[in-house]
Image 1 (cartoon, rainbow, N blue to C red):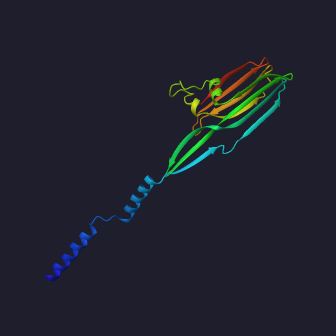
Image 2 (tube, one colour):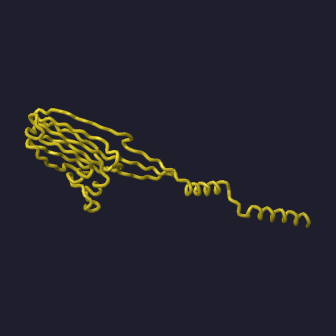
Length: 195
């Protein structure tokens, strides 16, 4: 009988010590990771482009026009996209670009304009009044210059055509435009495609 009571006592002690609320190693680790995520905030800032960037084109077209385009990074204005992965807060700043267009015909300047984000918004009709879901929604705030180039199609005899592409980074939203500048220096801004 003493043996049975001894075994019973050992079993009771074993159960009480195993049920005293201790956590398993995996439970403790999972809780520690969650607590770490709450208390530690790592932030990574990325700028695209990282440094000042400038591209200049100076070309004479077969129709007699001379076109100079200069595009350069606006180091003071950018679009911020934030993404949190694990415990890291990635902040990516996509810098806006400014661009200058100079057009000459017979050595006479007929068009000379500079564009920053605000002037481009106005010229390309990117505005904040657009309804959510419309094709150009948020282009006024989020779109950045993706490309600018002279269209050297010989069928344009008395006109300079400049192709411009604006995109919203990290999305598939794209807006294609043309600036048509006639031999009198009058510019017409048209949207050709949008996605």
